[in-house]
Image (cartoon, rainbow, N blue to C red):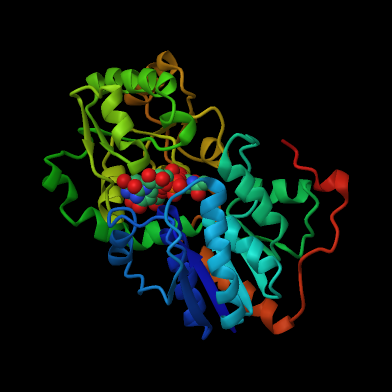
Length: 375
Ligand code: UD1
Ligand code: UDP
C-alpha cells in the first residue's frame, strides 16, 4: 500500500508523525509531502528535529498569501505530484488550508482520502478552519474522529457508519510518547522559570489578533492576569508585531515561538494556560492543566465536558474572573476515552484493512437535508 501523508503547518507535524510510524510498521510505503505553508525554522524545522520526522520526500513550497492564493498554490503543486506518485491513499490531518487543498485534489484523483481529526465543528463560519473541516470531511473516504462528539457531528451530517472511525486523538499519541523527554530537557531552567510559578499564553486566531480593537483589550486583560501569575507568551509570527504594537505589560514575557518539546514542558508545569489554539486545548486536557480558551466557541467541546478546558470568550472582565477562579480552584484532571496513545495504530489498521478490501468508500450522495451542516 502506497500512502501520501501531507503536512505543512505547525499543528500538522505532531498529528502526522504517529500515523506515518504506524503505517510504516505495518509495511506501507509512506511518502511525506510538505506543502510549505509554514516555513520559518521556529514554525517548521524545529518540529522535524524534536519529533524525529524524516525529511519530506516532496516539498511544494506554497508559502504565505491570501486563502485563495495559498490554497491554489498547494493544489496546483499537489495535483501533478499525486498523478506521478499514484498513491492508494492520501492522509490529511487537521483543518489548515493545506489540508483542504490536498483533500480537494485527492478527491478528483482516484486515490482514497483519509481525514485524521474528522468531525470537529465550531459551527462558526467566520473561521477559515471550519470551512476547511467541512469541505475536507465531505470529500473524504475515511473519517477518523478523535472523540464521540465528532462522530455525532458526522452522523448528524449524514455520513455512512462504514466511513466513520472513532480512532481517538493522534495529538495524544505524540504527547504521551514525548512527555518524559520534554519535561526532562531543562526548558524551565533555561527560561528561569519554576514549576507552577507562571502561566502560559498563546494567541494567533485572526479573530483575536488581526483587529487591534479586539486585541488591545485582550492584552490588557492578560496583563491583569499576569499580576496574579506572571505569563510567558510564545508569539506566533502572525501575532508578534501586533502584540508589540498593542503594548504588552512587563509581566508578560513574550518569547519566540517555542519548539514542540519546550512548549510541552511549558504547558506541563504551568499554573494555567490561556489560549485560542485548537491543539493546546487538547494538550492541556491530556496534561491535566487548567486551560482558558479565549474564543466564543470551540470545535473541541470534549475538552470542556471531559477535560480541563473552560470557554471564556474575549471579554476582559470574564478572562480575569476565570483566571482568578482556576488559580484558586483548579479543575480536576480528566481525559476523554481513546486519548490513550494508540490512535494512530487504529488508523493504520483501518487503512490497511480498507485497502485490502479494495473499493471506494466515498458516498455517491448524501441526502441534502441530512447532509446540511447543522451550524
Ligand atoms: C495557520 C492555520 C491555522 C492554524 C495555524 C497554526 C489556515 C487557514 N490557518 O494559521 O488554522 O491554527 O496555522 O499555527 O490554514 N508566517 C510566518 N512564518 C511562518 C508561517 C507564517 O511569518 O513560518 C506569517 C506570515 O506572515 C503569514 C502569516 O503568518 O502570512 C499567516 O500564516 P498562515 O499559514 O497563512 O496562517 P496562520 O495564521 O499561521
Ligand atoms: N506549539 C508549539 N510551540 C508554540 C505554540 C504551540 O510547539 O509556541 C504546538 C502545541 O504544543 C501544539 C501545536 O503547536 O502541539 C498547536 O498548534 P497551533 O496552536 O499553532 O495551531 P492550532 O492547533 O490552533 O491549529
